[in-house]
View 1 (tube, rainbow, N blue to C red):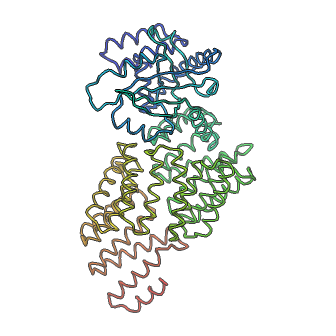
View 2: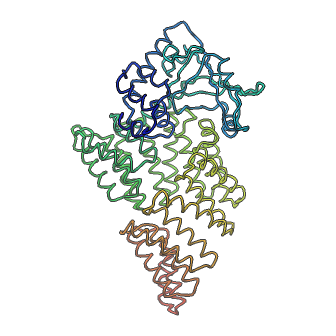
View 3: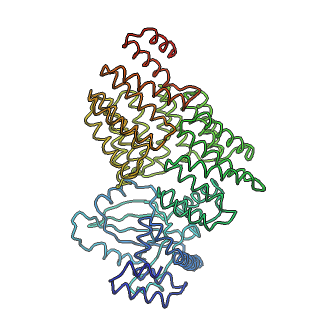
Amino acid sequence: MIQACREYYDGNTNEMKFIDDFEKNYRSEDAIVWYLKRSFVYKLITKALRTRDMDLLCMFRFFIDDLTENFRHEHEKLLSSKEKMLNAYRRVKLSKEEFDELKENQTKLIFTNGYFSTSMSKEFALNFALRTTKNNDDVSVLFHIQCNIEQIHENVLFANVNQLSGQQDHLVVLFDSNACFQIESIEKHAALYIIKMNLSTQGQQITKNFIELILNETEEMSISIILGRLFYDLYEYDKSQKYFQRLLNDSNDEDRARIEFSIGKIRHMKDEWDQAREYYDRTYEHMIKTKPARMKGAAQVLQNIGSLLVRQTKYDEALNCNLRALTIRQILHPAGDVDTTTSLRKMGDILVKQLKYTEAMDYYQQALKMIEKFNSAGHVDIAVILNQISQLLLQQKKSDEATDYCQRALKIRGKLYPSNHPNMAISLTNIRMILECQRKYDEAMGYYQQALKIIEKFYPSGHTDTVLTLNRIGYTFSQQKKYDEAMDYYQRALEIRQKLYPDGHADIASILHSMGIVSKKQSKYGEAMGYFQRALKMIETLYPTGHDLTATSLHNMGAAKFDQAEFGLSLYYYEQSLKVRQNLNPSGHVDMSAILYMIGSCYEKQKNPKKALQFHQQAL
């Protein structure tokens, strides 16, 4: 750690003095003192927390442990005092955009992403808040934080650290990085705004629930496993894989299965399906052969194998894996639990893809009934299932019922998240899909743009959700026959995807395919074939044994050649599409009928009525 800090601050004489002093004199009980000095320790930890730099957090983990322990000690002193209510103040300058965002989220939870220092002197804080700045658009804000010491008790750490801070003109109160606040009011007083907030216990509960979720999902008892899981949840797949590979080399027998399962999940998310399956199979075998067998973990592995098979469009096999996982969970928890709910949802998802809507709805309703039994009416998992039911009803053209379920999901999310949170964008996206089906494209576009604004603000450098929303906007413009606008949005989606996956990805091929469809609608057949061929080449490189998009691309290449009256080439592409589809789905697929019909049409155009009739009859 010391050497890394020296390299980081090379040439900074002032920070080098602090680093030398730290190396010679640091003691565990001095962690708060060092943090309050605002030297290299403060700066790097603050940076790590704000940017979610896991390498930095790992490097400073021993100091953070000391800081937390010191914090706990000082917090206990405060609890043992006679104080019942503590008022603290924090003065800041906010940009107009930041201030407007706070106003929009009044009554919602506000989380800090770093340790939070305040003053108990309102006068001291006011003097700072009223200082002028170079930016006239800045808004002067005084946060007034009310802490009910008896009510908060041990749920959130905060401490009076004045004796450690060296401040003589005001008392300093420091809040833990896990602190969570709820805005009570925003009032203007002269040249500044006073934002009154209450310290809330809900932040601690949310963090606790997250850790419990991780432990529940994979029985991961090791903090090292949890840290690697955090990399994964932050979409840092390469970093997460490197981390787990390092753990695998040093693992004991107890952790090995969990680590291999984690690597399998990463390879799964990177669409490295064969490698992911190898890790999953090894994990499953290890869990089954362990005495006693780890059936809970085995069910989780089966569920993930099922998800992998869905990506490969092997729906019957996927259904079988998820049914096995569901059976295990029902034996372990006859009354039901969260994992059983997930299995029920997964079964419904696969049945939707098989167009078995009645069976799918039965599984979704079972999942909804069970999750409502275990959670409050405002739980996010309920919103997830409501959205799935909404999408199913939409596919059945029951748009009014779909809207009801979607609105219920949006209402739940609206109570849990700020209006600008990506999870709100999910429900907005579902509403606009309903409007699309009702051919209310202008209204749908309004929801799309609102969702895109939220996502781009949350993920300014690009994200999977950004790509999905850009794709949907492109599709909506295409349905409106606004082809140039559609191509613009597809191009934006393509650029982000290529940045995220420079070596190629199925989603890149999918976007190229969509651009080919738009070009075909514009009768730009040369451009359309170019896009289809690029998509086909990429998908065949990634999945040489076949993929759903391989069949679809060949199908559309056949359609483009048919429109150009090149019936020989059209027939060739349709026949290739049929071969791929038959290999992927031996028991049949909804697209096979369309392919068979078009093969018949090609023969008809080639004046071969006998062959045309043969394939048209097969299509029925």
